[in-house]
Image (tube, rainbow, N blue to C red):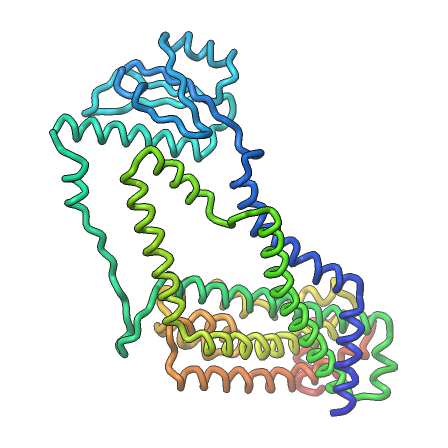
Length: 438
């Protein structure tokens, strides 16, 4: 055990002192923080927002004067024919030309928006909303319907979901938490498992392993390497979370950025022109925040975090043992690459199926995939937020631990032979021989 501990220390210290580790540990949170802050900063910064002047040729005489400009979108009514309007538009500095042909409110068709380049989605969406608003208002006026009377007919229906035990649940929150847990485990296990493979190949190529094998058993070397990289991975993972949160919070405060969805800001812009939208926005925003808070409060957060840590650690240990065996089978990374896909395939399959299992977390496929050690790290993280019977959780964990021990035993037999073999082209048939006679 003391020798394994020394190998863990060596593997950990060698890796955390590398420039690549330090650079990636610092650079990744900066990139994540930039992805979180920069889009919101650009969306909120007036420096990136250009005034868009839109010429309107209204041949129907129904819409032109009723279109409402915003802070960034200005309407300019023109009075000419379609051909001259297009020619004048090409010479002008206007952003777009809206052509409204002769029509009736009963059949409002044929709107055309001409842009010198591709028209932005926001502008197109705003124009559609404005034209629909005008048509609706005119039709209501013709039918002598007041907006107040129409509002009285509307009803907001929300379905409250709960389990058979009476616990409330939120499908949207469960979906988000499940998918986040699955993708984190999927990416982490592959990322750090491949690091183990590369470490084995590097030491084998440099002949360092020959010196180390003289002092420790191959299985001790393999376990020490696996656990050392696991410690590096957990350290890097924790630093990423802390640094991303700290950097994004600090930058947001420094730039005065409120990281909201730009579509919310667009809705606010629309609400200035339509008080009814403002009422709906305030109500829906309040309901949405309340539902998110309520949904999170109904989740068993300690259980989810505990399961994430368990399945992350043992999922990594299972796959890193296989990657260590793969690394020992080749003289270089190119040779080992032929075995990488078969080893990774069960995890990839689990992640692909997880996207369907999210919608049916208690079905037969979900149950069996969460029991198989090769797929359970991803699939069980999808199920646990929806609520899993305790016996299923215990069985899945037990099978994963058993799977790790069994795979480690098999991987050690392959590792013992492969780590000292050079210059021989290895195939699956050869590896099976090592497993049997190793």
